[in-house]
Image (cartoon, rainbow, N blue to C red; front, side, top):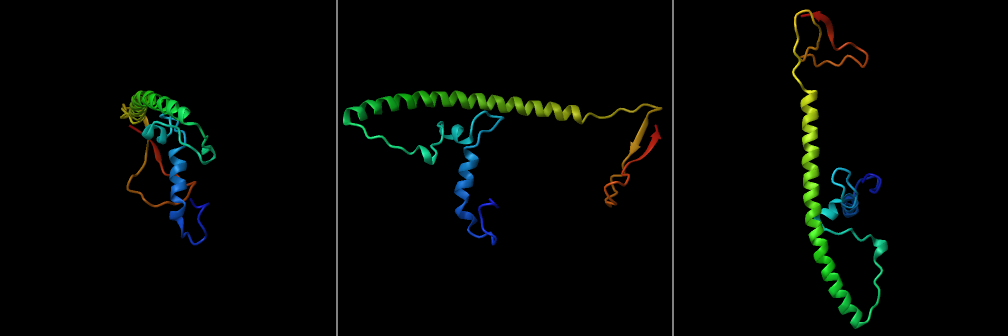
Length: 139
């Protein structure tokens, strides 16, 4: 957004549609789809794809039937894709929960272990290379 607006940062609202469209059409790794595909069930039409062919009346009727049947098939596929994405997100959430639980295990100390002490009330920042931990202390 900052690359599109001017120095005074006015007229940012003129670029909001472009930014939202860009976000909605970006492929997301976790879901395997774009947000646009999950909402509308279609790949978005980019401005370079707006080529409209001219057809006769019979071709229009045949294409209308084909379009309607393909739309029904696409809607069925969309529901399946949404279910797969929901399952993928649940699995991803579960994996993150397990990772957090493993990372945040309570430490059990026994007598004779060496530990470091970090004073939590110490808010002063003395620099990048100063010691923030004290110790080692024997339990």
